Image 1 (cartoon, rainbow, N blue to C red):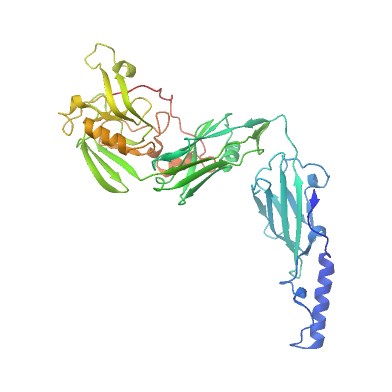
Image 2: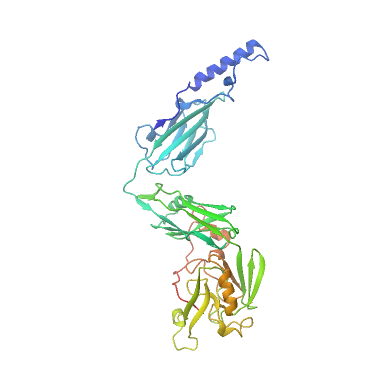
Length: 427
């Protein structure tokens, strides 16, 4: 621990000087200046508060502090109080803390990082309101036996649609809710323009982040981890993580009405195109709900056997498909379907995909990017699952989404069943 301020007179000596100044002014009479501005509690330079406060014992031993113990600062003088404390490590991470209402005590409320250097600034005042200050630095010890929890953020850096969730993949499972809260508090998301958003635990090793509403168009989104060195649990500490920056493009949404067999495209809330389509027929109904574009494939071979339809049955197919925009991992696309042009706009005859003419599919393919939104309404199919088959995150309302955060009353992810396997197509 190092004191980074030169010694000054203590609070009691300063109080004596203030009292003497007051007596001098009284003796000289009103309107006579008998002290400099240094004699006023409001304008005085802060005194050295070293003898007014004490730190937790681990800082008084002249060796690295135990990162598993909280930092605590106590006002020793009953006539004085602590007014403010800031503690920041060399990486710029601020240590959160709580100050007692009477200023008698401050303690950290988040874990200290291991093998880190902190600078602590403590402000005090004595019974006369004179300000005191103490600045010190200390280092924390290493924890060589602990596992390191790595975090990998996704998607890759680039430009996406306004529906693209952020993903945090953990290298180790985290099941305990208190430990999840430590992780979640350290995963920081900054958006310009600003949004209200939250993390949601998909499972023990994966979190998704989304705003309450879609991302703003033309936004810049940055995500980083402050976990490095932070204690998460017994023998588990945060490791280094590479930050990620993505951007959003225009707000592009396709609304597919399975009852009217029409897909309407909106760009920045303005309708720009209507397309006649066909969706899933009975027994193969297209999923309702909001889906996020996952990928685009200019050419894909679609075979019925990949979705459980036996070869040679009346429903089997093996087709070369162009301009295929994927919206589920199980094989649901928006794609060219020249074989069903006569039904497009009139009937649902597909095996679950949204089919349209080749010209319209090429326009759709060129207009939509990963992260753009495709919503289906009025289908007889089930609602798109939130997780495991793509990004169905937007099908959870905001309260249910927040319930999947460890920082709210819920904090447990819903049972989403077995993750869907990647299949070529449903046609």
